[in-house]
Length: 603
Image (cartoon, rainbow, N blue to C red; front, side, top):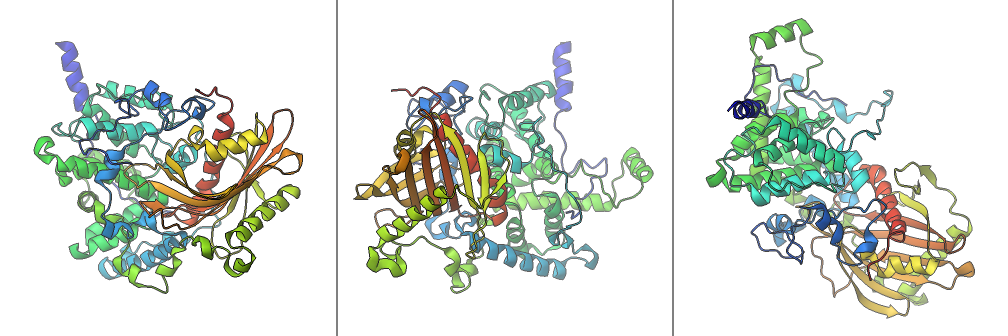
């Protein structure tokens, strides 16, 4: 009996903060600097095993080349969650209005427009002392100390660091927790409201930390829904800054405190477009999950408002941040002792609850661009920068042999760079054992050219074959690939589809590529660029590969040096994301190519 009583007491002490628990002041966040799957929640591999539920299942399953894609630490399978992607897939009519489909230049325009719109709306509808857009001006004088977070894997690690480590904004174990709740727990009464047991929540946290951001070894089978939900709340509460960021949290609160209801969606859309890409993508994943929870309200009794009351403090960090400009510590302590929150705290708690309720209800519309943008033909639609058709690729050089001339120019550029030892790049550090550097390109397109170099225990031809024909052995996100058309012996159009964090749409690439194997000293070269092709209609999001080049040269007995150069518009992301994230993702990809040779291949 005593043990049971103790557990009951612990349950009461779980993660019970809510936007209405206002016994202590809850300060504001000041503006500071693919396949079709049955819709029954089944996400199983071809053997019927749940993906990502057990370590062995994750390690063994691959689309192709099972063993070879395992890396230096037997990298676990990334989560695949097609039922979640399918249930939140936009209609054909709205697909091109999704933020995730917009080009880099369109994203820049959207950001500027959103800032103008939001500023105008806030100036019109909020009290004069509340206009909080000082954050738009960077403080150049302030030196920011950067942490490396090597001592942490999951909890308390910024989303940006998780992207650099895994390529996705949320750790794999956190995504698996979301899938466990969606697949097995939507019928649990009071999900996210009822507290879990502290000791078990702590054990779940430790399991995630021990498994790392890549989630190998995370298994929620048989766990209490309330423990997993509480752990998920704690994950967002423990982020170094709120999911809606320190800069924009107060802006979101102002929208829901002062803005007329009919303008809130427009204002929230604009604010969402000002979030860093990794925050916006994580927010969408969470809101879609919460939307699915509310769809089972008849069983779990969790309406959007009920969920918002339980989760707003974790997302806005309402109960953990302290006002810097607020009263003296003595007054703050007195208020806490008396249990009398001031009116401002109550207003902000209410605004946070209204805001999260609205965002859950409108999660399908929140991540679309304004429809009027697609009517701005000159200024917006033409910035889509779609890949050219094969016959257009050569441009003025069409008389010189069409696409052949274009590809030859690309090869010549690569070989000249290789001869000059790839000079003119600025090096930067990366956690991978690889040389990473970049160069700015002056062509009006704000994307750096990234270069990664590694040494590989294989001959140049073996490395080229691995890149060309065995992508499934090193690309952990590959869903499908095929040669669409062979144009010449060593020239082809190649199509491949890569997974993303659910429920974001898969990302496809359609490239024209050519390669050489008879270069001096046994070197090999491969160049790729995006094209349009009538035989491959766009499904989901199609990336624009501006430049993708590989140069492999021998550097010892059965050893090669692989240099990969990449410049890709993946769509739906700002230049800042590419500057901070993309180089690390290139380095990780090239490291996986190298590591695929150090693991025995299953024949």
